[in-house]
Length: 639
Image (cartoon, rainbow, N blue to C red; front, side, top):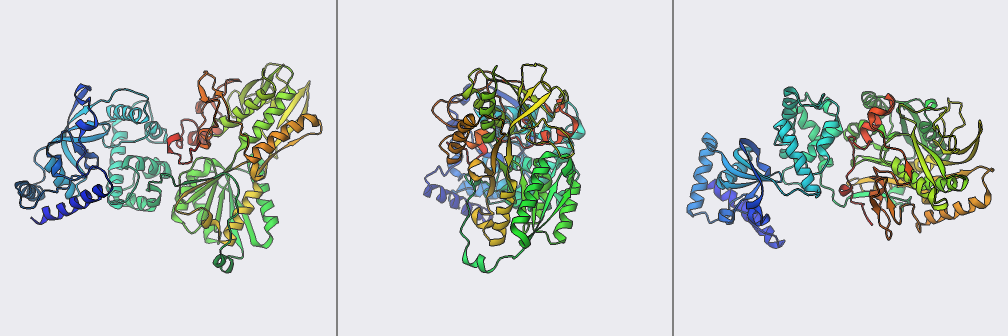
C-alpha cells in the first residue's frame, strides 16, 4: 500500500486546505456545474490522447467523494477501494493503461464517466496524458468571452486535430496564426500541423515539469506567450533540451499576475533609502537603440534630442551611445557587445523593438531594459510611452476653432494601438468647440497616400499632420496648420519631452530607487501625460491668443486630473455606445481602442494596404497583431 498511502497523504492535504478555505474539497461534478447538461448538443470525437492536466472532474457525483480535488484518493487505506487502486497502480507501472477512460469534454476540460481510478493513478505517476473515448458537449452560444474562446478552440481542433492546444482568451488562435511561419496559406498543411504538434509537446513537457506546484498561466496561454516572445520560426526546430532552456529562462514571465501589473500614470520621485545613498553607482552607461537612422525618422529625432538633453543635465554621471539595429538578430548581437563594454541600461526607442528586446532582457537580468511601447507584459522590460491623446485633444480644440466649414483633415502614422485614441480625442476636441466638425482621416503609411495632396476636397484647409518631419526631409506640412492657397500657415504642434523621462530613469538607477519604486517582480508600464510635463502643445503667434486661453484652460484641467478627453457619451462610427454619459473610460479602455469616433470619416487600414516599411510594426502592434491586448487582461482596467 506504499503508493496508495503516498497518494492519500497528498489527497488529504488538498482536502484539508479546501476545508480551511471554505471551498468544495471533492472532484468537480459536471452535472452540478451545468444543470442543463442533458439538453446540450453532443459530438463523439472518438478515442484520442488527452492531456491529464485538463482532466479535472467527474460527470456525476458517484465516486467523486473518493477523491480530493485533483484526483488524489482520500478513502481509508484498508478499504476495498484502496486495494483496487494499489493493484491498478502496480499494473499500470508494469504494463501501462490497457483501456481508455470515458469522458465528456466541456469548455476544453474533461470530466470522467468511467475510469476515475485510472485517471487518479496516472496523475499520481506524473503522466502527461491518457487515452480516452471523448464526447464533446457544446455550451449554448453567447457573447461571453469564455464561450467565444471555446468555439474558437473547436474551430481550431476541426482544422488541425490538435486538441491539446487550448487558449483561455478570445482572439488567441488568430494571434497564433499571425506569427510568421506558423501557417503559410489559408489552410493547414500536414507538415505545419506536425511541426506545431511537436513544438507544443516539447513545451508542455518542460513547462508542466518546471512549474509544478506554482501559480502560473495555463499551459496553452503560456505556450502562446512563449511563441510571441521568441518567435515561432526561431524555436520551431528546437529539441526538447533547448526548449527546456528557453522555458527556464522565461520562468518569471509565466507567473500569474492578477493585480500585479503596475501602471505608472504620472512621474513620482520615490524617497532614496539610506543604504542606496551610501552604495550607488557614480556613473551609468546607457545605450539608445534605434531601428533606423535618426536623420530618416522624426520619431527617432525626438528621442535622440531626449538622450542629448539627459546627458547634458546629468553631466559626468551619464555616458550614452547610439546604435542602429534594424533586425532582431542585430539587436541581440549589439546588446551582447554593449553589455560586454559595460553598458547597464538599454533604451529601445521604438515599439517595433519590443519582441527583439525580450530574449536579451531574459538573459541579462542585471541590465535595465526599457522599451518605448504601449503593449508589454514582461517583468524584465519596462515600457514607457506618452499619453499623446491628451495633446491631440488640445489640437482638436484648436482645429475646431480654426475651421469655418467644419471640415478638418487628420493624418495619422500607423494603424496600431494608441493611434485611434489620439484620433478620437482630436475629433472630440474639435466637436466640443465646433459641433459640425467632421474629421477626414488619412494615413501617412497607407499605400495610397499622396504627400502632395493628402485630401482631394479643397475645402479641407485645416489639417493636423505628423508632429514633426524627419531632419532629412525639407517640408513644412507638420503639426496643425491651415492651407491658404499654396501657403502653409503653422498654428500649433505637439511637443514631447523625452529627455525628462530619460533623465528621471537614469537618476533612479543612480540613486538606487529604480527597483524600489516598482518591484522587479511586477510588470511596470510608464504612461505619462500632460501632468508629468513630458508633453505639451506649442502655439504659433498666428493663433488667436484669446482662443489659446480656452485651450490652456483645458490643458490645466487635464494636468490636474479634473478633466479627461474621454468622459461622457462616446459613440463609434456604427453608432455603438462606447462610454456612458456619466463615466470616464479607464486607461485600459483607452489603450485598447480599435474603433473611430462617430464624427470621423475614414477607416483603419489592414497591414496589406500599407507601405512595406510600415508592416512589421503593424503586424506586431496592429489591431490583429501579435501583441493584440485584451481588456480583461489589464489589472489596471480601473474605473
